Length: 343
Image 1 (cartoon, helix red, strand yellow):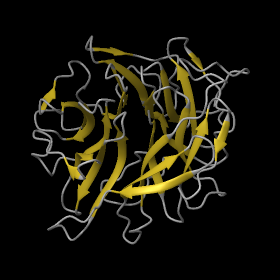
Image 2 (cartoon, one colour; image 1 turned 30 degrees about the vertical axis):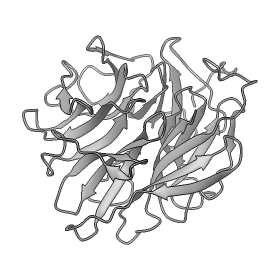
Image 3 (cartoon, one colour; image 1 turned 60 degrees about the vertical axis):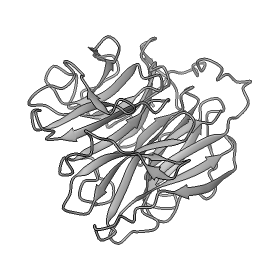
C-alpha cells in the first residue's frame, strides 16, 4: 500500500533501475556545463502541523551547495476558519506563476489555483472554480503559464471518477482531450511538458501492463501513447516530464528496486532507463520533478537521515550527486517539489 502524505481531507500522494554507464544529458546539460540558478516550489506543514494544513513555499538554490528560503503563499482565507491547505505546486519557466491544488476547509472540495508571484494575487479561473465541491488535484503548468492541467473527481458530464482536464488560461476555457479519459477507470496525476506538447498521466484502465500505468497524451495530435517498455506489472505513478517530454521521471514499487518505492528515469525515444546513482534508498522515494533541461531532479524521501518524516532532496545528473540544500527542510513534512532553472 502507498502511504499517504499528511492527513488533510483531500491530500493524496501528490507524492533506479539504471544502465551500467551514465547516459549523456541532452541539450546543453553536459559535463562541462556550469551549475544553474534554481527555484524550487514545495508544500510544507512546518507552520501548521496540528492539524496539518500545508502551505506553498519557495526556495532559491545556486545549483551547487547554497540556498535560501524565499516567500510563501498565505493560506489565510476569509470565511473558512483559516483552514486552507495548498499542495502540488507547478511553476512557469520564469518562476512568476505557480499553479497548485488547494482545499478550502473540510467541507469543500479542492480546486486548482494559479498564484502570480509578481502581483501577489490569485488569478481568476472561470470554468475551473465554478464547482467548489468537485475535488481537483495535481495542478501542472506549461512553461508559458498558458496551459493548466489538473485531475478532477466527479466532474459534471464525466464518468464520475478521476479524469484529466486541460484549461486555456488566457482563453478562460476547458479544452477537449478526446480519447484520453475512459469511463469506469481513473485518469489522474497529470504532468504537462514545458513546451505544452505532451501530457503524462496515470491510469488503471484495462489493457495496461500493471496495476496503474503511465501514459503520454500528444496534445497536438490528440492521441494517446502507451509506454509498455517503461511500465511494470506493479504500480507506476507520479510522472514528471522534461521540457520536451522525452524524459519521464516517475515513482514505482516494482520489484528489484533499492527500497519499497523508488524513482526511475526513462528516455522514451531511446526506450531505456537512465542512471540515477545515489537517488534511491531503502526508504520510500516519491514525487519526482525534472528541470526542463533534464539536469536537476527534485524528489521526496522518507529516509531516516532527513530533517523530518518526509524531506525534499535535489540531485544533479551531471555530477551524479545529491546537492546540499541548507534551510530547505524542516522537522515537519516537506513534499511535492517543483524545480525549474531560472534564466
